[in-house]
Image (cartoon, rainbow, N blue to C red; front, side):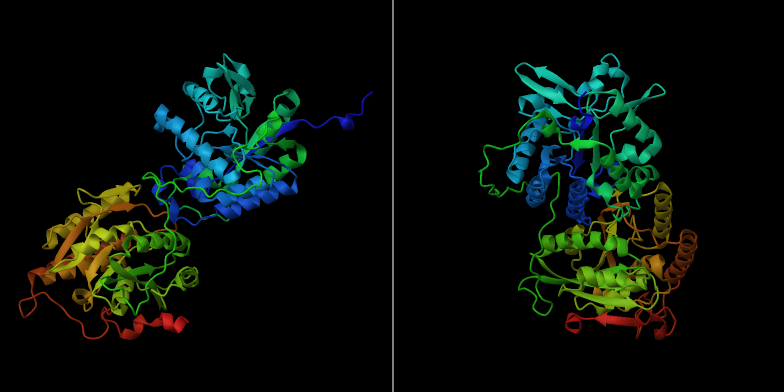
Length: 600
């Protein structure tokens, strides 16, 4: 009788998907690809976390990687390969195959393979779709894969009734296309009450009851000779990933449910079963003949495409006291109230804004911490404190966004001053088009999503209805008929607003600033812009209080329009503190005004 201990354990297949937390299919409706560069990047640390986890169990897996990632992060791909793992393709960009004509798909297959081979120095044999599992109508793609030199694919989950006539497709099988062949490794499913339930890992592990999935995997291990294919995303090991608050309830369930349990789930399977990569299982070599045997890394080309906006690299910024010749100095005010979660996103966005505008403008940033209690002040200094073009203000308590903007204007030393939203619900890159609108005789340029050429994305319909209703009422009261009166995204002529006397604070004060200028006879230009949903944190607006405040403000503005001041004009000035609303100056204490000189 043979010694059972000498029989090698049954081998299953482990695959790992390299993508960041904001690149997942769960957020397709909320996060646009052109916004990806703005997010806090956690890709590198999560990759090493996954590698360390696999090392602790001595497991070698197949890592499916986008060609774009290989071109941007060749050192990460090389690190995965150097740990003994196989590199395989998910295409170049994270795109659905139905978005690509056949010729474009074939080009994508070639381009991704070449990028991954340059980065890893190994032959790329496998493919998995980066968006949407393959359906029965997608079988033609497999022939493309075989013709382009791929050895296997793992893009099917066999749950459709269309495959009931061919039950063998549930398991690993080989396909022949003329002289070319291709292995297909469908992700496993479990027959539960007549329904084929996916049990491959990832979201399925986190959504379905764990005892049920655990029993299903055990059943597969004992009942079938075909290997069980398991996968996970590297972001599923990151329990501290930033939460995208704008996501729908369903999106949040897909992304975050049982995220804290995923490492434990994986470790349980790693202890119970034996796993290898797909090429290892097939006995295929990934040695790449075209790469030098010495392992010398080839420098990869970075592809630029309109579809994906690449974040620019940091550049040297001009100092405040020596503005470059020919450049117009511009101050940008950033009011912040409990915005700790949004600041990494803001930081990456402003790097790109500086690179976009630096040929024409010398930008100076003034961050106003409006009495935050969540660590915003320390986070501001961490992200922006070393930049010579940045200064910081801190209020002892929350005064409201209008007071924060006016305080920033008071400390600006340029005639052109802009205010942007810390959460980037308006794209600050649009300043390159808005600043030139501040021409002769213009005192304010305001962003307008409700303009016929503007756009609103993912903002709740009830909020849009309230905003449009308030804009309608302001049009009846004020002289200039605009589509939007309440946007914080603006360009100001400092001399026109420095002495405005506001009686309202917060969001109402933003509308009052525009109303005051309108009654003073200032010219206001409206710029059509896109308003997007806030991705991080939450809105600070108190809805009922704001609605009541708008009626109060409208009544006062109407009275001022009907009853001009004694000299026949509406223009007001305020000697002393421009933030005052009738209260003593001490109510508006500034605890810190930090200059670059003081910081150093």
